[in-house]
Image (tube, helix red, strand yellow):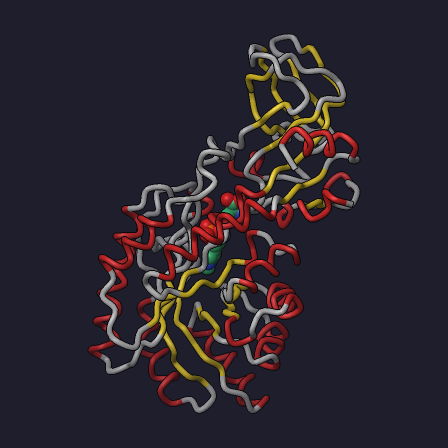
Length: 387
Ligand code: LLP
């Protein structure tokens, strides 16, 4: 379908809805594999970014594993058909029932974030007569230079093992028959566009690897998490993120030994650009100091602008004129923060026009709520276009 045909098809649909262009996703995946395969790296797609079944099927077709942060995500990954051995389970607050579920299903690895958690996994694994593979999430204290809400690798953040607990953690790992130490895990934050942050991560990871070598513990897996950012300003021109330089940094700066494999957990960089949130203008309201384009989708469907003051490119799909009018594009929710963009330059906009909020494939649908008792979320994909 051409873009024009697609817009025509959008116009026939009830709004608001997310649209996922699976062809775009396939292009991103092809580019990703091309770069990653040069080095033999492994991908565990971060389900938290988008857990739609059609999206997950594409990841499975590429042989990826899944990075999950809740029992619900582990369940979704298994239902979608991921190889349980390629499922990793992270998160600072895994509940007993989530741990049991993961043990029952013999997932590949628990990314453990505290000594206290490791003790519970050991206890439950013993009870169930299971063995759990363990990677320790370490906090490298690297500044990812991104929004403070999505920075995770600083000492002040809640993530990762307390370094003061490392000795007791290793003692438990060495002693336990139900735990197998496999490797180490890092994740420094999300929407990282300054790639030097990943170089710093590599240098810190090298220190940790040396520490484990000194303590005679074999690290088989090194998992450096996700975090590669995308270009929200240019969703078409920058459909493919800078995978080449991203992987080159790890190849260049991380000192891996023979037999050590390198794992990634990208989310946003894979799925953000394939998605757009389509909403319709209900009213053009003249305010005292500005005009508002009030649309039928709101922060209950796409919360990123309200929560992080995140920028998403906004387009009017119904008008072709010069973008010589300015509108605050706002939703119907009873909150001032329910704003997709302020003083957005658009062609003269009318009631009934379709608005696209671009780059919404990551952390859009998954973060939606029912706030204001909004209706169920509607998702369309390029597979539906033919129907
Ligand atoms: N691995 C771990 C352990 C994570 O915590 C995350 C994201 C990822 C991987 C994937 O990161 P990505 O490649 O997508 O950057 N809701 C926020 C983003 C929160 C990210 C949380 N962790 C947003 O809308 O910007």
